[in-house]
Length: 223
Image 1 (cartoon, rainbow, N blue to C red):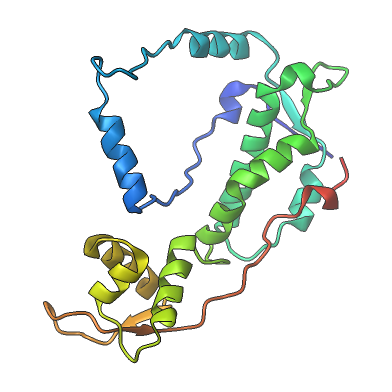
Image 2 (tube, rainbow, N blue to C red; image 1 turned 120 degrees about the vertical axis):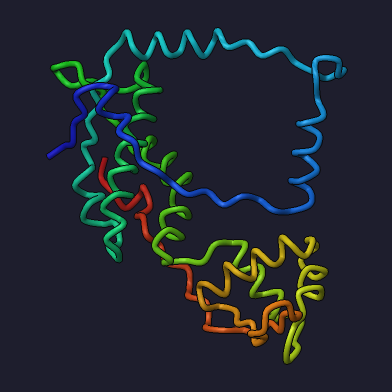
């Protein structure tokens, strides 16, 4: 059995994915530079939206029905751990259809003309969402949390201050504080200081889980 979308509007059902913000000084500097650019900058480039408008017209004018012949294989092989995955799985199917739609000139068609998604479409989508889906159900730990907990462990002290941790991570205290809160909310760090306004006394909490493979590799599926 395959899954089918009846049109582009059906494909664009709203599904939300959470993305972590990069909090490194390098990224902050890149934001500064982007904001500093203006029409008088030597490297300023005028934006031409016409290619995107043409793409939208091309998408709207052609075939928009997409089927995923391996959808049931995915349903059987995705590691089912949480109710939230019901939404995430639907989002993944939508993204696979969208990728196939963007590459419809190189995709086979059914007798009725529907676009047939390929394993290439799944592979591209899997690369984008694998970590997001795993982090969303806490089957794995976000990279920033793992880095922060590892930094506390590396300092090898009974208690770690926020300043020490910020220095170790190469971040300012506010960014380090947000990371500590995230890790503490997940139980992987503990702040022994419970009094408001007092310096943090950070120690290790629960062990971090091993990396879990939520989505199957493309080679595990039959096209």
